[in-house]
Image (tube, rainbow, N blue to C red; front, side, top):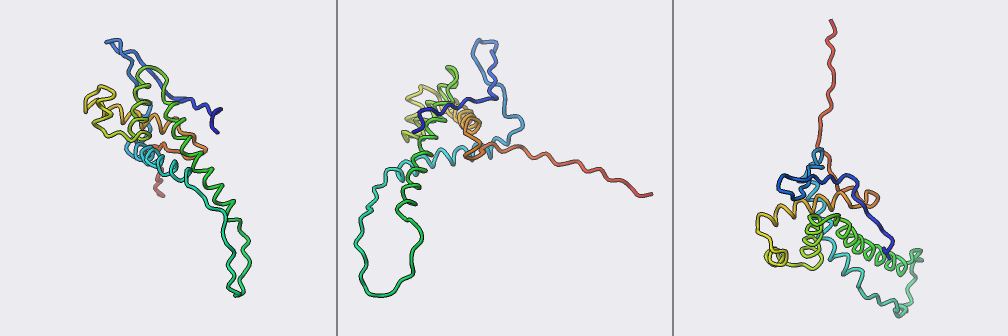
Length: 178
């Protein structure tokens, strides 16, 4: 299981505003936020697919086919392949939950983590999430965007790099041949 997994965001910067409320500075200035959010949302939406596949019941006992026809030998271990696939799906589902939990650093980011958990793991509707968190529609959208960006930041690069950098064209020097 993933009990020993510790994920710590390395680039999170929290600043104190004039009102005394912690606000996050833009740590994503070199990041294509739209595409990064799309990547994070894709992984978060796959949670239920992985969770259901991990819980799939396998029937490993099969009757032998005795039709008398010659067949080529099968060299693959299909039962092992199914077990490995089931373990991978279980790992990915647990990883999503661990990354959501790792988003929590302070009181503000705890709301982001709770929002992701309600929306993607517990499958609450947007309205039910807003009621549970006692936030407005505009605040919900702001929190969701920040939560998805933080999820992408915390998500292990070894599994998949969800961060998409902004494209900066390379400057090529042209020399005139006089």
